[in-house]
Amino acid sequence: MFIRNESFYTFRRNYPVITILVAIHLILFVWMNFLPFGSLVRNLGIGFNPLIAQGEYWRLVTPIFMHITLSHVLFNSFSLVLFGPALERMLGKFRFILIYITTGVIANIATFYIGGLNYPPHLGASGAIFGLFGIYVYMVLNRQDLIDQANSQVVMTILIIGLVMTFVNTNINIFAHLFGLIAGAALAPIILRKARPFYQYRHVFDDNEVSFDPNRWRKRRVNKQVVQKIIWISFAVLVLVGLLVRFM
Image (tube, rainbow, N blue to C red; front, side):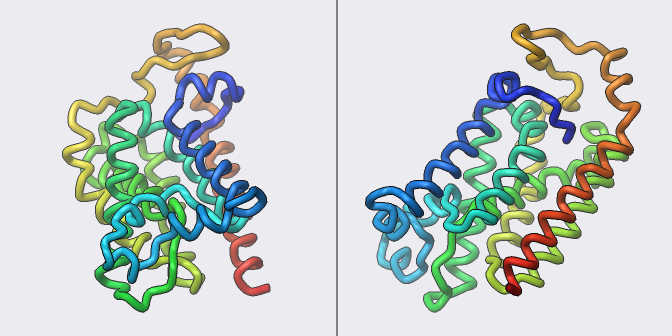
């Protein structure tokens, strides 16, 4: 589920929603930091509770796509590329973008009501990404037919790291992370109806679409432990970078 060995071309064809979301992340990051009217874009879109209270409700949605620091946009985009594709394929394009935006909005609503009017400005896709993790957690606990044991261990390990980082880093929106996770788990029973395991779906390899080949899938699982180690090491490096950025 979390093995990414496609070229950019095949990834773009297999997972168009993920590709578009990451592109939006990067475009807005570059615009806000380096292009004309960047500060205006940031000020109009950033989550800011006093302005939401005055009726600027679009600020519950726009922060989901905005990042102001390089480490923030890279971390969230990397997480989306790693953990989003399986759900995009299992849920379909419409349901995936629906649950992604819905959990992100719920995370920002929680920030508004619990954080109060004195809560600092906030932005980032973390609430929506934790919403995806919430769906995976529901799979691990209640839909083992959709996820195998090895991938379940990866999900829970990364989730624990993410929750630890949520409380260690004071610049993180704790409300968005927790309520994004809760929203994803709560909506999972509905959104996962009629879903099938990831490996049963058709994928695009090279330039042509081919049907699922069980023998090919078994071969791909031979090195699963190696892949898991690579995933854990990658996230450990990202966590270390986050800590260094936080305390430098």
